[in-house]
Image 1 (cartoon, one colour):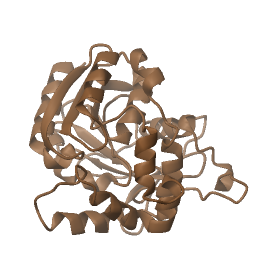
Image 2 (cartoon, one colour):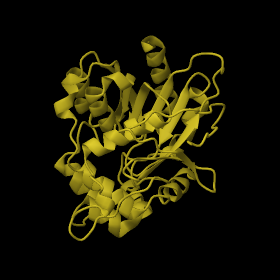
Image 3 (cartoon, helix red, strand yellow):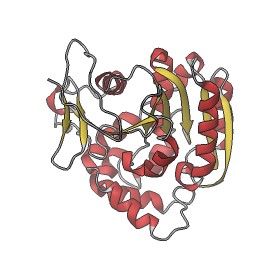
Image 4 (cartoon, one colour):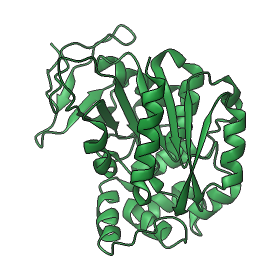
Length: 313
């Protein structure tokens, strides 16, 4: 029997079968909640809802960017969860989610297929096991690349798509930058570890310009939760991920939260993205840095909620 897990004021009581397999929800000794997929990987998730329980409630799925995890979106929850159920999930190899190790023969531990279909299937499986038919997908940075492809391939699962500071792919210059002098990006992650890699990134202007001097030490400590091997595997996956062939196929309402001064994606690229996705709304968010979901949180939250209010279906 599937475990009933109460998070906030929401208790999932049924899960849908995925590939004719019903996997039980799990909770660890610290109270963290997980979905176990048919491939035996576990995805850590956090679910919050403080909406009126007698009213129909739509669900927001937040998907973080590389090197971060669900905890980094803590400040969005009070703003969103009074009207919506909010699910935050850790990507493969990030936060408390499990990951397969890469073997000497180049394959992945346990026969894991580290490709786009697997990663998207795990998102869908998470929703199925939590009993969620459709979501407002909010993806930050590379998390938004997944959202774009998901919207094109599985539009029936999305009410809307919002991408924040999202490039459609990572160009060679970005991959070289993320390698920090090592052979490649995954190698840098393995050698430096998750905290060390993020610390190197934080020294680049236009990445994490937070005025509060206490923020960066906290940020680095929390990125250290992820295993260097875990993010290395995901870096290898991201290195070839490209949403461009899918953008013109997106038919769900789309909001683009575009940073005006990001080191990872230019405003010209964001404008081109808006022109490529049919009917997309472009919201340019003024201010320094790539992680505008932190540095310009009130602006992003207001634009996002206004967009959802107009797009409810």
